[in-house]
Every structure is written in C-alpha cells, then in structure tokens.
Image (cartoon, rainbow, N blue to C red; front, side):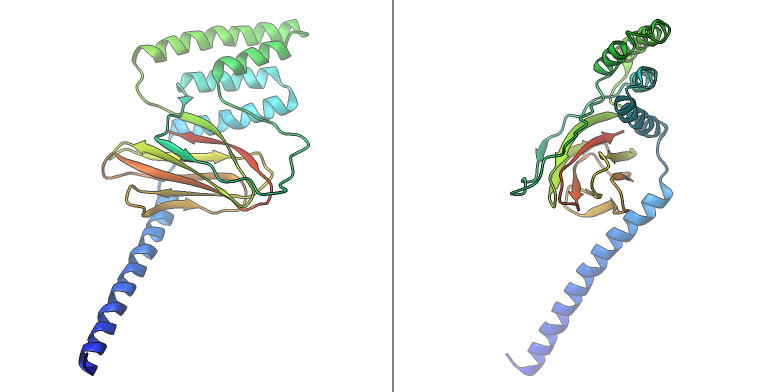
Length: 241
C-alpha cells in the first residue's frame, strides 16, 4: 500500500474511533441529564419509602411501622418481579459472613403477619395492626380486579467486588424506573442498558441507595446491573415501577 493509502486508512480509523467515543460519551451524558430531569413517579416514591419503613420496622421490631408500610405497598399493588433471566456474580474466596444479616422482602401478607406477631403483647397496638390488615385485604381485592403492571420488587445478594445482572422488559414510550435499596454495608452502583447494550442511565453516588430512569422508544429487554464496590456481600432490594 502506498503512503497515500496508509494515511487515508489511518484517518478513517481515527474517525471511526472518535465517533464511537462520542457516541459512548453522549449516552452517558444523556443518562446524567435524565437523572436530573426525570423525577420519581408517585408509585416509585411510595415504594421506596415503604421499603425503608419495612427495613426499619424489622430492625426496631416496630409492628405499627411494619403495618403502615404493608398498607402503602398493598395500595400500589407491588408484586414479585418476573425477569427474563438473572446473572448473579460469584462469591469471593474467603469472603466473610456477616454476624447479623437482616433479610427483608416486600411480601405484604408476610409483613402484616409479622407485625401481628410483634404486637401480640400490646392489645391496643394489635387492634390497630389488625384494622390495617383488613384495609389491606380490601385494597388487594380492588387491585386484583383491574390493575395491570405496577411496581415490582426482588431481593438480591451481590457479593463483594462482583455484580448482579437482571434482564427486564420495559414498555416503550413509558417511564421505566429502577431503584436499589441495600443493607448499608457496602457502596453499590446501578447501571441501566438498552437492548443493544448502550448505557442509558447510571447512579454511581456513594452509598447503596440508587435510582435510574428513562423513557424507552419501544418495548425492549433492558439490562440492570448492580455493582458492589465493597468486599462484603450486600443484600439489596430491587424495585421497578
């Protein structure tokens, strides 16, 4: 190949590399802009608050707090997250077990039943909890008659220095939200990719409470990646709208 041909090839290669870099950077910038512009939906806000109340309720053994949280979750019709597939990371050799592990899920029936058990020694509290239980039954009946979709949750364990990946379908032209609430032991980062593997949004703030959102152009299988930056496993709750 002559000198002119070599120079032309190098120029084309440089343009391709530069264009790819710009596309990647643009996707990240778009993610940042969306994180700033898209506000939590009312359902996601309620789900996050109720989840934090559930965690605190179990930690403090507070039946009223648990009952109230269960009522909030029932009203938004939260349900088990059904994913296309998941890819848990591998446990590190020698990774230590926690002395105290609080495993929490958002099963409304289980939460209210646990609240009743906690309140058995206090008749006044028990009466309030059982009243909330009746309200929950009514709200669940209403949800089952006509609600489609709505908030979902899943409990996950991501090992230290590892990632946990979920593949989830999101509807097109509709707000797609993902939130993560960890157990407080390590720093977690959250990444959202579209069906083509493009980074759409991310949350790399310090801590293990994360939120990403976007509005997909069409219904697609999106990838949700949670990365554990610590060297101890983290039990987290994943919430979608």
